[in-house]
Amino acid sequence: MIDKRKLDHLRICIEEDVESGDPGFENIRLEHKALPEVDFDEISMDIDLFGKTLRYPIIIEGMSGGLGRGRKLNRDLARVAQDYGIGLGVGSQRIAIENTNLVDSFQVRDIAPDIFLIANLGAVQLNYGYSIRECKTAIEMIDADALALHVNPLQEIIQPEGNKNFSNLIEKINSVAKKLEKPLILKCVGSGISYSTAKELKVSAIDVGGVGGTSWSLIEGYRGKGIIRDIGREFAGWGIPTVESIIEVKKTNLPIIASGGIRSGIDAAKAIALGAECVGIALPILKAWSSNSIKGVKNFLDKFIYELKICMFLTGSKSIKELNGKIRPDKSKHP
Image (tube, rainbow, N blue to C red; front, side):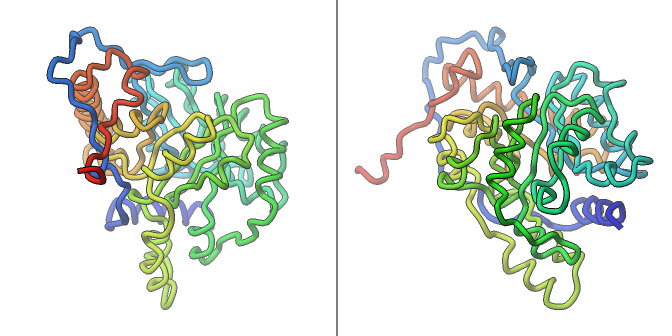
C-alpha cells in the first residue's frame, strides 16, 4: 500500500501541474554592485554544513524510495550528488522500516561515499508507535549524516490513508533531538513554518518548505475521489510562503535550509541573502530526471549553479557567507 502511494506521488509530480502559490522571491531584490570588486573566477561557493563541506549550497531534497522507479531515482540522484559535492535527502524510510526487503532501495553510500546524506521519517509517526529507536534505525540504515523529521499536516489530512493525530509533537520532536547523536532537521512539506512554531523547537536546523513550490494538497487531491479532489484544489496554496518562512525562522538563529519554489539560481541567491545556509530542490530535479535521466539533472544543476554564481558576482560576494544580507531595502514604502 505505501509503495503504491509513493509511486503514485512520483507519477503525479511528473505528469501533472502540482505547483501552487507564490514563494515571494519576485518581491526580493538583490543589492547590485556597479563595481563588484570581485574576480568571477575566484568566487568560492562551498559551505560547511554540520562539519561536512558542500561544494555548492544545494541539497537535492528527499523524494522517494521503494521498488522500481523509486530505487533508480535515489541511486541516480546519489551519483549526481557525489559528482557535484552537494547534499542529498532520501524519501520517507517508513516503508523500509516496515518492510526490510526495501532497505537497499535507500542505500546509496556505495556510490556516494562523501556526500552529506539526510535520512527521513514522518514526525507524525512519533504518535503511531515510533520512537528514538526508529529514528536511529533510519540513520543507520543508510549511514546518514543527519535525520529529517518531516511535518505535513495538510497532506495527511487530505490523504485518504493519512495519519491525523498531530498532538504533542513538539515535545516528542524535541525529545528525539536531545537523544539523537546526529543533527535533527525539522522539514516542512509545502506549507512553511512561522516564528511562533519555530521558536519552540530544539532541533539542529529547519527546512522551511514554504508555499510556492510543490503542493501536496494538490497531489493528494489528484489521488483522491469526489470531494477530496475539490478540497485538494481549495487548499493548494495554504500556508506560509517560503520567503516569509525564511524571515521568520531567521529570528530563532537556527540554521535554515530554504525550500519551496526554489526554481533558479537567482531564487537560491535571494534565499541565501535572506539568511538561509543553503537551498533544497525537489520538483525541478525530478522533472529533469524524468525527461533525460542523470544528464537532465546535471544540465539543470549546471544552469542553476551558474546563475547563483552570477548573482554572487553582481552583489560583490566572494563567498556564500558574504552573500548573506545583500538585499536591497524596499523603497516603495518611503518614496
